[in-house]
Image (tube, rainbow over all chains, first blue to last red; front, side, top):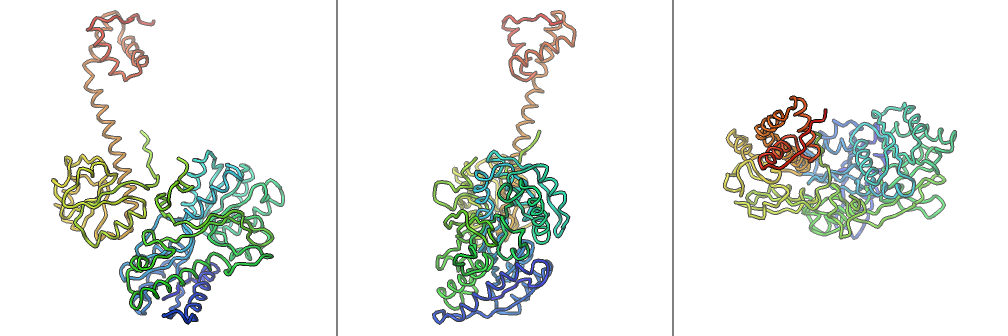
Length: 354
Length: 201
């Protein structure tokens, strides 16, 4: 199999977390005496250049025997490699949160989509924090889609979007966002900015909160659908009080910590272990099967229908430098098109309102 | 007229795929199930049950008029063409049948969701426009009644403007279009029913 992550470039610290999780799992598979197979890792680094992904994917599938690739951090890179996977018969294991509305025959999705991040987060937040919401995001598919769905969810719950402002990727001038939040006084802020923009915003917003307690985390917290432990060292004090959602949090620093640094490592790790389990049960040659057939051959946590993974939902807040889980929902199937048809009745929580 | 695009989930909707059994359809069927639709396959003809489907996918390559239990162009649901051959004759037939969206064969999962949303939106828009056009036609056909009503009112001594205002007041009072009010007014006059014809000056 191949591990293809951008360990250099704009989002290297997140990609490195995925890469570390995948490699640790490959080592675990190879060290397992019970396992009838070993993985050889074909490592590639697209250096966060979107146009490098498709050629690299084709070269892996043409020039090596790898049929399964764990990789891609952004939705843009995932969309780039899908045509190559279709043409050459490979499978991408995508172990990152994303905005949903996709289910490629050639991709397995092992982290949360919107049925497991945004919707449970909003359903938790609206009755507890209030219904006046400020939206901000980076100008690309993640920010746009999160904000679209959040607006729908909030307004259907009788709430109000007090304002929405999006920034170009990489933009660090967050002054207008801070001014608008100060003027509109929302109950909470949903932050879908990414990378440097997000860090700049969170630091400025912390400064505002220090100045005016109306914007401290206990009065107007910042929520995010993808903030995780790997970003905390970059935020230090500005992380305190942030609320996030994910299938896994390491837990409080003073309590027995979980086995993974963050859900990013967890999902990459789980992907490799599940692939090994499927291949081991299906036997030699099964690495070449269409992945849907492989999933059907021995039922596990990944649905052969949706290619998405049964995951729990945890909503957690940064307290004293570590995430503390505030609310959990037991694992349930991913529903990338929000169809509401993958759960037994009653309707899932996100379909329960008109 | 403002058109609202339905972006609501498609969970529970029913799709019929009118295509001979083929390996290429597996990706389409799986994708429809992910999106939350129930899928039925039909070949060579649609069953009467297909009339109540929410979407029909049809084969543009081997399709023919008699497969559909309705007149070409008057499907009661959005249609999505599965196009292999781009021969002009086949495209022409596809348009005659009335495709609201299309997918190119071999169908991969990509494009199915957007085809469903686009087909539903364009079907809704077309149907709303057709209803509006039919209503305008009906009102156009009532023009003789409007003329007749104006003549009756003018005969009672109203100016053109007063007659027109009077008819508009009837329409408001009876909660109907101007033309329908004219039709009712004329009908009442010819049946001898009495109406307050005093002009408000």
